[in-house]
Length: 378
Image (cartoon, rainbow, N blue to C red; front, side, top):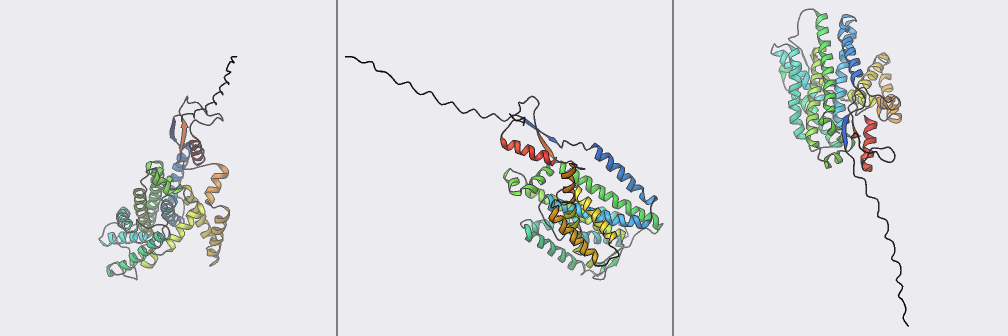
């Protein structure tokens, strides 16, 4: 008896998982927000500020000189701490050295106005040497070391009797003509340095160095892991900040033609620039501008209230730290979605590339997250 062997049907093969979509081509562009209107507004504001000596009293222009000096200092400290992650409490070293650089130029019977660029260059060169001493330090160690450097600079300066020693020295070589014209020239020099600092900072942050600094601000370890030259970027930032603070110190001596070590190297300079940055918003160009405005408004409002001035400043700082940790400008930009200095970058799918199922650009999820993240910061 023969039996037919019945073969069992073979199981159907499991469906293969869908192939992952190949990442689509993308391109990198500048911020989506146009800078034309902010640029036009900036030119108008600069023109109005340049005309002010013809329209206001000398006391107003003198006050604005102090405003520009603090704006320069706050912008430099913001570049250091807000982007490079270098929290310094010793920037007064370069402020004092900048003042004494102008004093030395004046003692050699050269116009102190020529000492302004000389002070910036000299402090930048000194900053290069100081960075060699501090480059291996971070966090609190870096901050304390910068303070020590400032104290050493103070002690070195007072050892020179030709520079006034510890009692100070008046600035010589200033023009002896019309004092009104001299005050106007000091005002225009301060305005010019402030504009150069802001424009230069904007140009730096829109370039390749700006990308490295933005990556360092978000995650220094991650920036190093993708090949960013973090150490070189920090060196450049430290030298730029040293030169900027030196220029601010030179402007301070031009406006107040007497330099004394205890005032030139006072830690109050650093306290004021840190306050302006934290109140306005660290890590943005707009933050130090707004913070400087708030600081001077409070200073003028509370000028006649004695110690209440410091109490109110402390209350404002605590309130901003609690309810607006990104600063006042961070609060404004979040609510109104505006940027006066658009320096961000955005990833876009190349034209014709298929979009994802949810309308998102093609590519892996990490790319989508990066796109959304950059889009918020543009």
